[in-house]
Length: 412
Image (cartoon, rainbow, N blue to C red; front, top):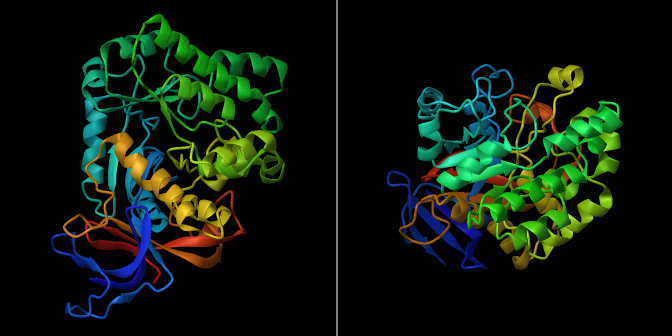
C-alpha cells in the first residue's frame, strides 16, 4: 500500500511526504519525500490530509451479550474504525457484569474474531467479583455511585483493593450518598438530572479518594474517569492522579441539555456553561492529558421510554474536537495527537506504537481537516443510530483508519 502527498505527524511536526506499508507484515517500510521508485498499485492520494498515530479509547461501553440490541463487539469495532480508533478498552458494567473468569473468557471468544481493532475488557471491583481475579487482572473499574448496571463499589472494597493491588484502577467518581440526598431535595426527573448529580457529587467522591489515600498513607495513583470540573482537576493534580475528559463534557453544557433533553442525558451529567468553558480552556492550554469517548449506546426507544443515561461517541469524538479547534495549526494537531493517541498508549502501557517511522507497525488515522459533513444518526455504524450532535455540520473527519497495515475504514 502506498500513501502519497500526505502531511505526516513526525516528532511533533507535520512533514510533507509518502508512506509505504507492507500489508503482509503490517509495518511501515518507507516514510519519506518521494516513493515513486517503489512499485505498488495505484497509490492513495492524501493531498490536504493529515496522517497521525491511530486513536486509542480507554473508556467505552460495547454492551453485547444481553444488550446486543444496543451494540455488539463487532458493531462497536466498526464504529471505532470509522472514528479513527484501533484499540478500545471496554467497561465491565454489562448484563451480565464482567466479574468472573468465565465472563472474561466469553468476551475473549467473541473479540478474537474481530480484526478491525483491539478490544481489551475491564473487570468490576465489587463484592460479587471473584477475589483472585481482582488481583490478577490488569484493568479494574470501580463505581462510587450507582450508574448504568448498578455496579456499586463500597469504600471498604476500594480500601482493600488499594492496600493489596497495584494494577490499573479507573474510578467513576460520583458520590452515591450525595446523589441519594439530592433525590430527596429534587424530584427524580429528566429535568432535574443535572442537579441530582451536580458538581458536589464529583467533588465529594474525589475527597473520599483523597482521604482514603491519605489515611492509608498510600502512594497509589488510581485513574479518574470522565472528569467534568476545573476544581476536580486541581485536586487530582495535587494527588498526582491521572484522569480523562470526554468530548461531550468539553463541548456541551446545561444550556445544550435544555435543548437536547434525553439525548443529552449521561452520568456524570453536563455542567453549567461556566464550568464547561473552564474545562475547554484547560484542554486548549494542554492540561487535559486524555480524551475518552465514554461511548455508551442505548436504543432510541430505551432513551425515550426508560430515560437511560449515556450517549454514543466513537464516530464523532475526534470530529467534534477537530471542528472546535478550526483552523487547525500544528500546535492544535499536537494537542489532539497527545490526548487521543500518545497519552492513552502511555497510560495503559500497551504495545501499540505511536511512532510513524520505518519499521514500526502501521496503525494510522488519516484526517481530512477540510471535510464538512452533517452528523446523521442513521448513517452511523453504531447499532443505536443516534447522536447528541444530530444534524450539526462538523469540519474535520477521519477518512481512513489503518490497523496492522490493513485498511479498516475508508471514505477516500
